[in-house]
Image (cartoon, rainbow, N blue to C red; front, side, top):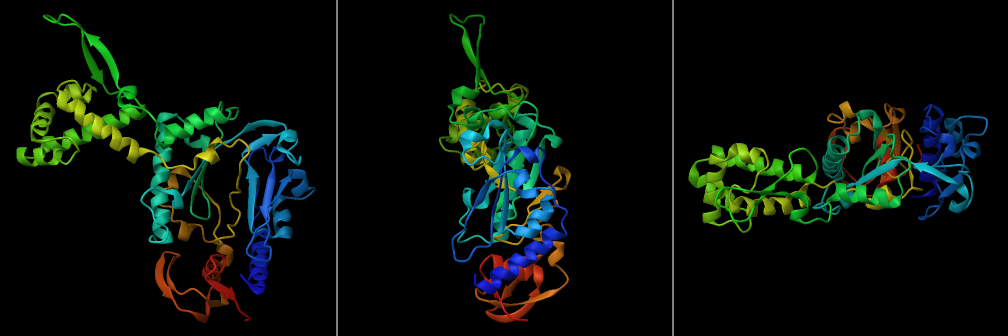
Length: 396
């Protein structure tokens, strides 16, 4: 980024903040604040260990941001007695939000070099729904307990501020992160086993069931019942062929599983997998698949860090020019980051730029190709390209 581009973006970010009316998070005066300015060169400088008094003083957060015109803005998940102290040991930690970070670059099966930015964001949104499923159904958090935020860059943040969460330490947060990502457990850890006595049995027989009332066991059970429902609807040959797609399931086991699906449906629906040994084998395969597929690929260090700095909602992301956007849970299905996070302040007028990195672009709900050289673009797109290093500002 050359000097003309940097100064242009710095000024336009300041104009955005001057009109934003942006406010801080709950407990703003108890949090540490930090920002990254538009500094010359390729490196960045983090200005941190600031208190609310340091940044707002007698004015507002919007006043501070309009004056400083930062490239990135952060606040701490932690709350402190002395948030402006230079050393963490002197801040006086009191509590911290439980924060989850989903980054498209860290998703399984996503290669940033081969996947478009728009497709990466779409995949990350799918991972977000997986995370919310855990928070809502496994942990019982209500919609008002969690603030969902598009990071403005490559993913999403979720801030949980429910009662009983704020005081959790690193180890407890690490357990939550492990549970959400996919716990390091064995099949026997999620199966309930009880002894069943019967006529003619010298010793009680074990009965293994998958929980149906929540947790990872219930997730495995849902996958099992989806497969059971599928094979019940298929002709015998197709059902057996479908079951043989699973590792370790040959024709004999597949035939037995199909028959159990037909004859013992109610028991299976109740969680009983001991209706036939073949069902136990299949459940173990589904267990491995469920752990691999159903976990939410959060950035674990963000969740465990009780002092973490996280992006300020409604601020601008200096690597895209997009708004760090809070999203209502009910509106998440329809949210499109490359449309809904585009600052209105940068719309409806043009800017002159020189495109230095040509190629495909997806922005504002459209897909198109840009060519190298000087051109005039809607400012929102121009800012997007400049912040991503694909264009430079030229003289109007």
